[in-house]
Image 1 (cartoon, rainbow, N blue to C red):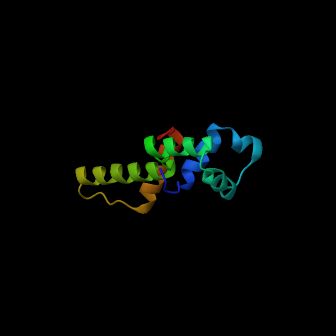
Image 2: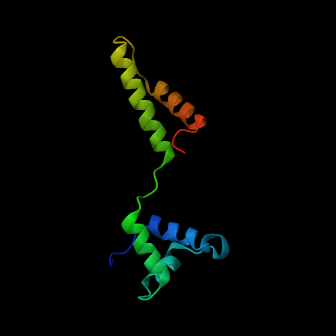
Image 3: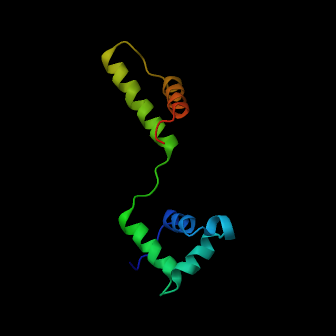
Length: 101
């Protein structure tokens, strides 16, 4: 692959090579490492980008599920009014329950 990889690919490759814990590289440094044509780091980045999906934000998953549940509840009980407070409380509950881990 010749396209520059997104940040999540560089970070994931650094984790897998244990660079994050050992050297505390910045994204700029990881991009320079990726730029070497025969770099094994570049090959790892290419494989991650090709075969894996970007990580999903768990907070966003909880909020989307809470909104879906509240809309479903409102559809069943027509006079029931959904407020942002209801959705926020349910999203927090989902987070605390470990949804999306």
